Image (cartoon, rainbow, N blue to C red):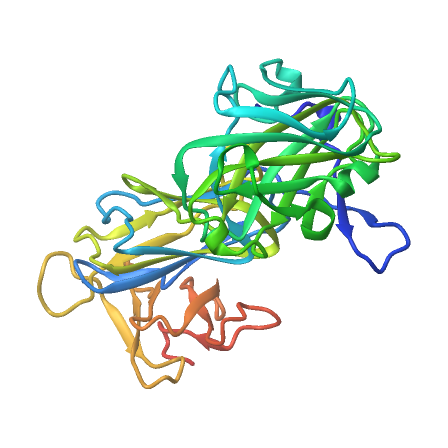
Length: 423
């Protein structure tokens, strides 16, 4: 489910022991569905050639939350799979869904109160009210009355039926929302816990305040959803490779109380592998900072026999409350070409030279059969076209090449007019 307008106000809160207040608040704009840009290198291949390696790069123009990036491979290109496609995240974190909290009732979830806390109550249920859901069909509703006490803690936990291996995870994330303004002290004192026993017995814990790296909220104000990302890498891996339960602890100490309702939704953990489904590969995220990238390396690929332009559709979703949407700026394409070898069916004329100076020939191909060499092809991928123009007014495209990976900023590395043989 999409967020209601009142929940679209975002703040970035970072904990620092160097500050007089434990929180620093500043605005942080999230991306929108379908934002960002994508390219592919190289962007051409010879008809029917094998052993081709392509790198598709998505770059976030604004920060993403727990969204995702998906690439759809067009027919008849080989379907992506773990054997031919790897995904790398830069300046962000991949993830996978642990619990969407849609189940009603919330099977496996329970509560407990430890210590001295007279007349205290703590209950969990599934809330299906659309106004209380971050995404999907439900959220976990926590009703608590943990008044000021001495040494008491409220536990909200999930018990796995069988042990789970969390040893490769370094982070967890979830959304949290309250119906009444909660004390920041409560949030500082809250913990995420994991245990290799049921009911969070003998659990390891991570303090929200110590491990907080990302929250989108206004001090957990009334009706605001907060995206929390916690670093759990400090918990020994041998304490979470046979995980039986995980959950949350809310202490009830002097001047700290939980009285009211919390909602939790969409629990994830990462890093995690991409999801492959037929001709699609999707990488889910815990977060991706502005300027961060998701890179799909599509390797050892046999190109189709049929010439033409093939678009690899890239979709992006800003967070788990969004919708996968094709990029507004368009998706990258690979041009399949046939080079004139004096024979074959519909060969395309070409010019070969070494404009990038790497000692290997690059090729410009006349794909339109109009005497203009409009398509650039570098077999080793060491250079790529970053812009085109008709530099001398002959109605033919000339190529600006990027050799050092900086694109055309502040200026391209090489100008090549293959039609007139000018480098």
